[in-house]
Length: 124
Image (cartoon, rainbow, N blue to C red; front, side, top):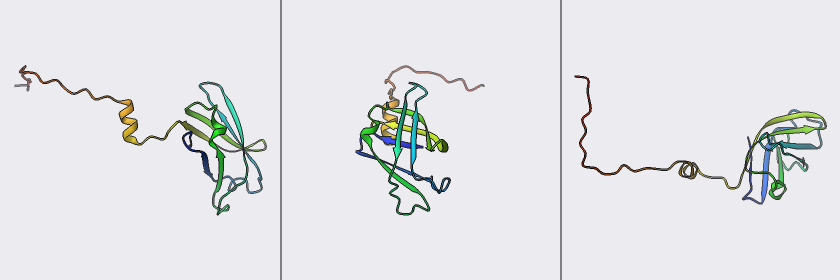
């Protein structure tokens, strides 16, 4: 899964594209939101990987994704008309820790103190 954190200035993608298409020189990232039917297209240029035989590294300005709404989207990386990779991409306004996600999604309701007695039936 690729993640775009809108809070950061740049977004770094680490992929293995040259492993699949060793002769490719330029890749295109297509993003499609099935919920809003929006499509975005970006050129992945300047592979900045220190080890291009092992992985590819591309850096894009996060401001390019300003029109992408937070949520999950589908992506395809193309070399010309050939699909090299496809998967799910997630756009977030801010990456949250697990504790932050839980605190945002769930609320805690503390039991009230009461003087009521209750009897639990144990089957006897």
